[in-house]
Image (tube, rainbow, N blue to C red; front, side, top):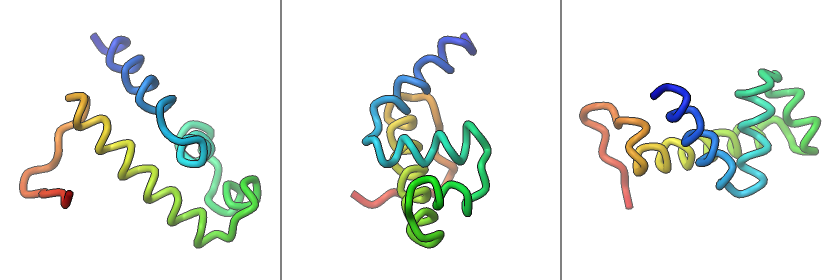
Length: 79
């Protein structure tokens, strides 16, 4: 079951827009520091951080909708 869950998570990641996918891969998969991520993507550190936050929110929203992630109690998303 765990490997199937990993595959579904990978599928969700692959479905993200390129800019969001790139930043998640560099930061979360390859473990690069944000300064390095920003340099590789040609962004300021602040822009890279904002993009990373957006990517995490989009990814968690999609994982939640697929039943692969549960929202913490008391969290109500807008939209």
